[in-house]
Amino acid sequence: MLEKAKEWIQKALHHLEIEFSRLQVGRANPAMVEDIMVEQYGSMWPIKNCAWLTLLDSQTISISPWDKSLVHKIAKAITESNIGLNPQTMADSIMIKVPPLTEERRKDTVKIAKNIAEEAKVWVRNARWDSHKVIGKAKEDKEISEDEASMYDKDLQKIVDEANKQIEEMLKKKEADIMKI
Image (tube, rainbow, N blue to C red; front, top):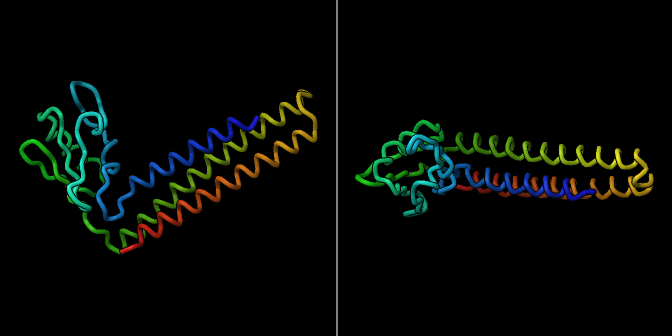
């Protein structure tokens, strides 16, 4: 009865983890650019599906397209993505130097992180609402008793509380990471 809620909550937590990994915190991370879409052979592909992404050091991402004709298309896609990175094209690769964050940019990034965390909480609330409706329908259809419905609701609330606690912990950790100089 609660399996669907658990599944959705796990997806929300996983999505939050991925979104947090994409936030720029003054250190290079391939996740920052790997899902940017690039036109290749008439269709759109994420960079990770058409190039090698490597870290040269903590501030530099190197992108080596498998098809060297994509160098300029990838650089253009990164520039147009408005994530604040300036790709430098070489003969057959792209270098991205991740600039250190200013205090103002750090505060803006924390706001973005809070919005992403709130989005995850909305997913959790929606999972709770959907499961609550399933429990109510089962009780209404006499598939479960009133006591069982109450038990399921309590268990559901425990799952939701734990997920919200995890989201808050992830947010605090990310905030500390962002504000660390």
